[in-house]
Image (cartoon, rainbow, N blue to C red; front, side):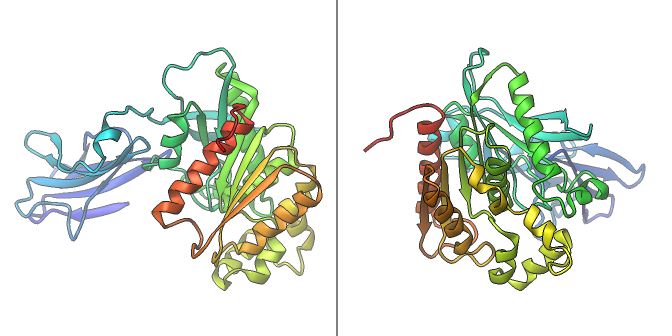
Length: 362
């Protein structure tokens, strides 16, 4: 992605996203040579409001964040080639608590496609096949899991959960063919890419195969629901945040712009009814075995509350282990701080109970 020119016209900037990590570059126009701004691993983008370059053209502002570090502004000096942190947004207690950084990993899926994922391994784990792990499918599906400041991952890894966040087919950042590889196959090849991530976790020697959960929101919630329905024996527990259970009911109640996006992925519902049926978790959800927690905003315009209600009603009728919590005055995602805290606490308690065997607090 392009940046800006310096005031003296001698330099310009750009950034490169590679496997969910972003690096900034400064180009000397006289030689066309690009130098990477040396900053820690993570998302490093120019802080341009209106321009990242200082008026003297001798320094540049860069924003740095990572999954274990909230966003801060740094100053990079061209003469010294040194970056110095300007702001410190993390509260003192967080700075004193080291959190595991992400690792970029690659593995082959069922059809030899190479899948990229971010992996977080808590400190001081024994490599004895006893640890719990979570798969974190991202939203979209036309999106990418990147190394942003991730409070959910921080909360989960600090409690001993290994986390992996794949970028399966359908994700952006890996070419147009890869992005279109899930066309009319939502919950098909991309689910197999997520499951290949499970096999990768097992191969590390850290993970207990009976202690693997899945947790996602929006399309990640869809992936959670279709995963526990189509591949019920893999998962020990699941948490779905505002996920889709049926693409056909979504078309009837979601906002018009999202409906056009869905049609671009699944085709015309009149002509491709079987695709909509085959790609909907409602077709498979009665086969699930994993205890499921559903978290949903009452006023979600993108994935309406009715999607969550369908899931809960079906599983309660089947006599399965399912719980639900609706957040008043929340839309697609939880904005209020108290609800963000409550949702991750409920998520941790759910996985602690069903993956770790901990007795829930009264």
